[in-house]
Length: 258
Image 1 (cartoon, rainbow, N blue to C red):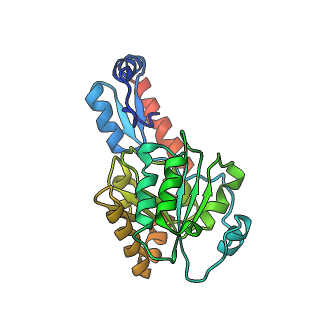
Image 2 (cartoon, rainbow, N blue to C red; image 1 turned 30 degrees about the horizontal axis):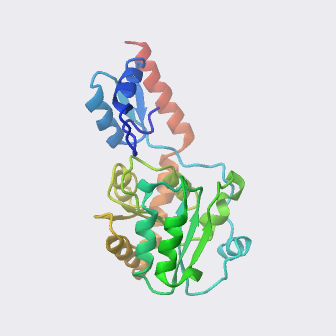
Image 3 (tube, rainbow, N blue to C red; image 1 turned 30 degrees about the vertical axis):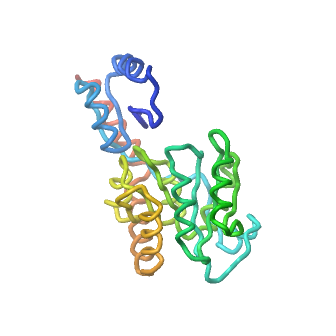
């Protein structure tokens, strides 16, 4: 099962090691078509099948937003619009883009940042200070245990994935479980797995202006939330673990017959 074929942060040894590894496999499962295309460019002889990542189901049942806010010590405000950036903080994930987008949004918007930094968090702290309203940011810069995940997703109104590069994202599978719509950038397989499935909005450019515009569009049209949640529920039925396992074993059986 291939999450990525081409790394987000390249090194000189990536290509030879990847090609060497690919020679050892009989077939591959990719989690989005974009990774399948990358695989074909490197080795067009490998049989492969795209199976989207199933919805995560082990994070427990959703809790009320007010309860989640209380657990995170986030003040409840009736008119707040709470955004979530979740997961390992790496350069390609574009947290700086989202922080700069916050500067373009009014005081109703708040941002939860939850995840372990891959390096220093200092540059993000500096950007937050430049925004002039640090009280709008709620920062949890550490590894988030599975048992704690629900608090962050249930405290949010919208997940934002402002990635500079991507294939697909496991955050999508978590957001679907908690029926949380998303705003994502048009990189890798994000449009394929989110925009094309009608579970969120897709930004055309990886810029603060474009991200801020998409966020405002979502909150300016309440009907989008209803539509996205309806589509997320359909996706959760389609992306079950039982179906994934059935399709996976079926693909493996075709390899055995060759």
